[in-house]
Length: 387
Ligand SMILES: Cc1cc2nc3c(=O)[nH]c(=O)nc-3n(C[C@H](O)[C@H](O)[C@H](O)COP(=O)(O)OP(=O)(O)OC[C@H]3O[C@@H](n4cnc5c(N)ncnc54)[C@H](O)[C@@H]3O)c2cc1C
Image (cartoon, rainbow, N blue to C red; front, side, top):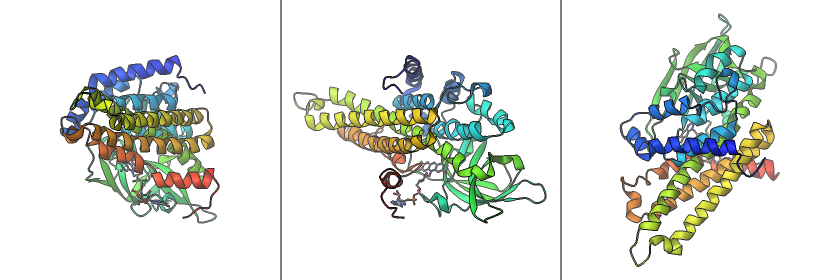
């Protein structure tokens, strides 16, 4: 892995940045204010091949990896237009189907995910399990009549279910020999009887909504199961590493956008004889934010690279650390950007204050800061587990 970006990656970055710039923060803010979705940007990014850049060429994708997809998300975010569904639809669901789906599932889903005409949400979080995903209780049992599956359970905070044709649901099946529950992944089409959703009212200025899902005797055909019933955990992790890398890209795009606004302001705003950015109390924290962002980007590139070369284990540690570092950089940078603008940091005109909650998402989801610290202290440092 070279620490210097290749020419192709630089060209992709520049092209996506130019697209993001054409839409810009005003577009994004207006979409949120109107309660709409970023359909125009999504469609144009799809047409240019950006949304499926990580998916296999034979199914309509760009044949690249998470490295390329993270560049797309980071640059759109840096232009003020983060597309959260990129984390879920092509990164998690597209990856899992491309790696473990049957030929039929690949043909059914990948071309649509790649050209953006179809989206897929991802549901793992449950109200009673929270960060402890070993406790999830959404259960799938065989339907003796049809040979298919019957799912029951509940999920929370699942993003974009209303705009996704289906949700990839993490459930559990019972091992016939041991009686132990094994994680398994199921494609649940949005309008399947028994699959209902309630929007959760969130204090977030974002076009994507979060939902509570109820699965009440949801009957699915046998081929709704993705991959092997006995390799559920491995398959799940194949999707979760890209999710963490993409959350890092989401956070870093946002952080870069906020830092740029703060630097612009600090250069112009003059209340004594010099711009406020000439005061080290304003300049140094912004410089620290820049350093934090660049360090997190390096770790994100490492994680994406390890994942793309097939090192799932190595990618696991790096993706967790990248997500941690990027989440912390985003929270700190947005906070500092708001402060740099003084009162204007809280105005609607400058639009930075609403990013405070958005930045916190990257600290909490898809795995919280504390759970990453648990992972690193236990897995990387070999310290005892506290839970
Ligand atoms: C905007 C948004 C979008 C989301 N989108 C999706 C989605 O599309 N699909 C999906 O499945 N989920 C989604 N989530 C859910 C997200 O992944 C969870 O919120 C996250 O995993 C944390 O779980 P929790 O909220 O239940 O917190 P809890 O597990 O209840 O944790 C509460 C607090 O306790 C801490 N904590 C818990 N256990 C430990 C421990 N052992 N040691 C130390 N501290 C601990 C946590 O770090 C946290 O600070 C989304 C969440 C948000 C906010």
